[in-house]
Amino acid sequence: MQEILELEKKALDVVKSRYLLCILVSQRIHQLEKGAQPVIEVEESELDSPKKYYQLALREIYEGNMDLEQIGN
Image 1: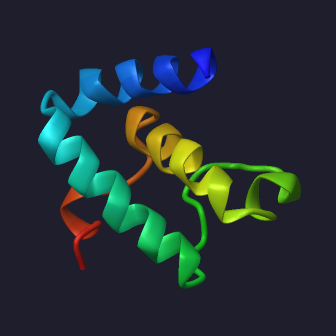
Image 2: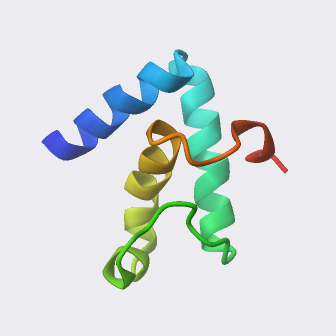
């Protein structure tokens, strides 16, 4: 749980709005569920459960490896 809170704080440093972060993460999770490839290096075990997509989406945002403009597409 503490790890998730840290990821959220780091992602908020990038996005600055909790509302926008919620929208971006939600859209990214849907993309991952539909088969989109992660834009950061992850181990296979991180892709074995949709429950892990939340953390993955947060990591992608705070590591700055994704184009936030294209998440909604």
